[in-house]
Length: 213
Image 1 (cartoon, rainbow, N blue to C red):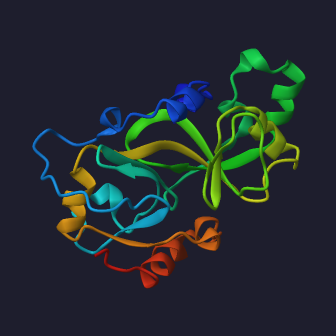
Image 2 (image 1 turned 30 degrees about the horizontal axis):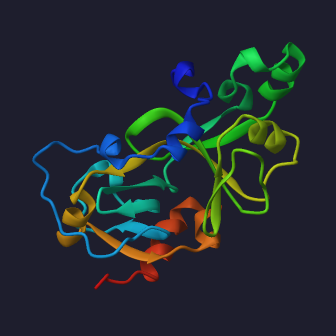
């Protein structure tokens, strides 16, 4: 894996605060648009058996934003492997002693989607907060390296996922995919988000799914 991809990006916070979904679209211009009815943010988006994109087979996504301009979210059940925590932190902001300690701590990372895979998102339980934490209902995202150091020192959130990249849809794109039955919804469940047996996330979320009206 290219180590450059794993350098922590400090522009995540700016990205979250100045979010504009037109820049997130991953599709070509000729995707089939659907009609926006209601926001599906703060829901699981679950791939159905009709999903024809192999990247998203049996995928569970936490939808963090959705409106008439588009949507974005994070895949939570596609592991990429385990790496030393030091590779996620810019060496310019840590001492040699800190880096040596961080190389001894390995952490699992997840594929969040095909968009901007150099961006790192720490999705975590809500009891942890610092100045960059952004709340999304029952879960939060924190966007600085302090949380990674806190995780290494067992001072971080009770539950967390380190995720590279995200999934994004432009105007009407997600709705079009849902109208073709490629996706179905269910309510967010903190236990499913942080389920340790990854192969259980999709069936558990799918079992609770419903068809949006």
